[in-house]
Amino acid sequence: MSTQKGNSSRSRPQKHQNRHAFKNTLHDTSHKTKSIVSTQVSNVCQRCKEIIEWKIKYKKYKPLTQAKKCVKCELKTVKRAYHIMCDPCGAKLGVCAKCGQDKEVVVAPPSEKEQIQLDEEMKVLLKSLPERKRRTFIRYMNKSGEEKEEKLQKEDILNKLNALKVDDGDDDLDDFMGLSDDEGDEHNSES
Image (cartoon, rainbow, N blue to C red; front, side, top):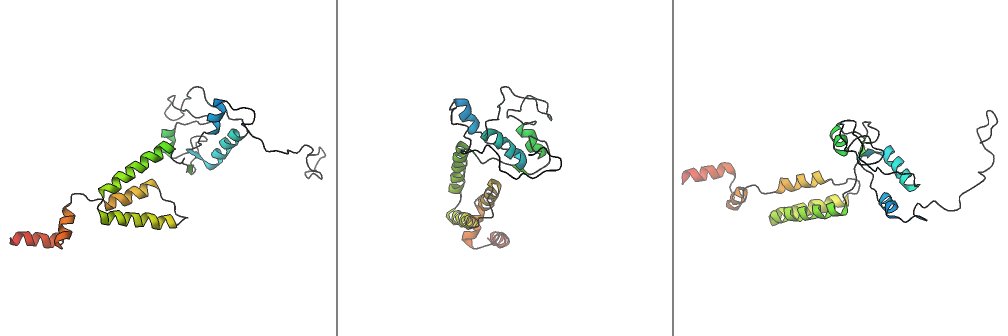
């Protein structure tokens, strides 16, 4: 910018323009740099997430060497750089773990290991369902998969599975006999 008083618009482009984008792994391929680049930013608000991602992208991110003290529980449990709260305190209070403000928190997608574990749990739950309810659940998943704007959460899927899950097996017997609970009681009392 010009040093003239009141001149806030420049009439020329900047003198030194970048020809290539910055690459933080161009000359440094150490283990530390690779671990910093692979860091998942989570449990923070969108603005703080962008700030930390910028620091990672332009090699300004400095990871913690020791755990810091959490401002809420006052224990040395903060393991992520630039955070002021540990993850459990931030989740419990529903605030950003970096700035501490009550904003919408960005949750990290599950890691590959967690995703495999979730898939295994889902398969076990599906096997416990009878065929009719299993097909109902698969139709529900396919229908919700077609609606792109509505994203499925783990809680929604588990709620749907639990709603379909058979408790005792008594319901199947009543369905087989074609009687409701009241009619079944009357039928049993007549015998």
